[in-house]
Length: 415
Image (cartoon, rainbow, N blue to C red; front, side):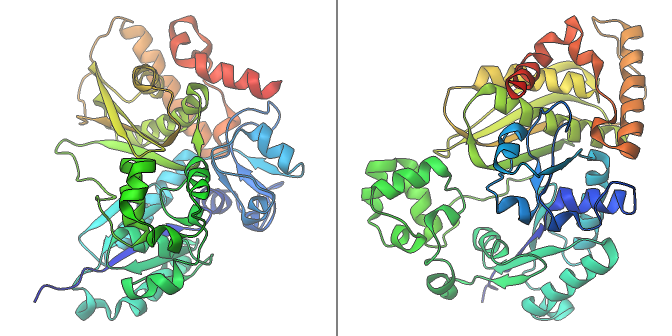
C-alpha cells in the first residue's frame, strides 16, 4: 500500500524583523523586542522611500502591509519605526534553517528565503509521529537558531501552508483533509492561498464570502465568471493542490528568490522596487558563495494565475547586483502587460565558480571598480545595515536604465 504523503510547511515568524533583531541585539536605539512594537523592515527612514519588506504584528493591526510603499504605511501608522534590511544576515539565517531541516528529510524545498516545504513521508520510524516531530523541530529552531517558526502539517503542500498561517507565533497546526470543513471553510475567502484583494471583490460580487462557500460553489459557474482562475480556486478551497506549488530544480546551478505579495502590484514602478530587493539578495548570495552566473530570469504570476517568465543571456559571468538588476528591469519591461501581479521572482542561473574575469564592453577597469564596490557594500551592509551606504552607480548615466524606475518611485514617495 502506498504511504500517505506528509508535508511540513515551515514559516519563520516575522522573519526579517526576527533576523535583524538577532543581528542588532543590544545595540543602542534598537528595540529589544522589535516584533512587539509597530515596526517594519524597509527603506530609509529619513528619505521616506522604499517598500515594506516585513512588518510586526503590532504594525499589522494598523493595516500596514508587506509590499506597500513606506510613505503609505506611515500614513496608517505614524509611530511606525522603520529599520533597514540586512540581506547578508537574512541569507545566513535562511541557510542555517535549511541546514537544520535537511537533518529531518532529504527533500527540503525552499519556497522563499523564510519558508520551506519538507517531505516527511515515511519518516515516522526515525522521528516519531508528525505532530511530535514538528514540535521538536519548532523547539529546536527557537533554542538553537534564536527565532521562532510556525509549522503546518498535511498531506499536500497547499494545506500544509494554509495550516502554518493559523494562529501565530511559535505554533504547530495540522490541516488534514478531514479537518478542512471545520478549520478552513469558516475562514474569510481572502484567507485562501491565491486570493488577493481584487479576487476577493470578484468573489464577493458572486455572493461568496467564505472559503466554504467557495468550496461548495458550482465549479463551472466559477469558470464562467473567473475563467481558469475559478477552477484553481475551487480546487484550493476543497484542499486540492491542482498544480505543484514548488517547481523542480533546474539542472544548472541557479540562485533565485521570489516573493508572493499580499496585495497586487499595479505599476512597473512598484514592481521595480520589489525586483531591486530580490536582486540585492540574489547578488549577495552569489558573492557569498564566490559564484557568478550568465543568465537572468524574471518570473511573474498575475492575479489570474497566469504565469510567464523571460530570460536574458548576459554574454558574460557576473555577480554584480547592478548588472542583475539592469537585466531584470529590461525583462520586466518586456513582460509587463498591465495585469495586477501577485508574485515576482528573479533567478541567476548557469552559475559556477569563475577562475578568470571576462572582458565586457564597459572595459576591465570599470568591471574591477564594480567588483570592489560590491565587495565594499556587502561588508558595510553586513555590519551596519542596508541603508548605511547607497549605490551611487545607480545614479550614473550608464546605469540610468536600471535606476529610472527606482528614482521615480522615490520621487513619488517624497511628494
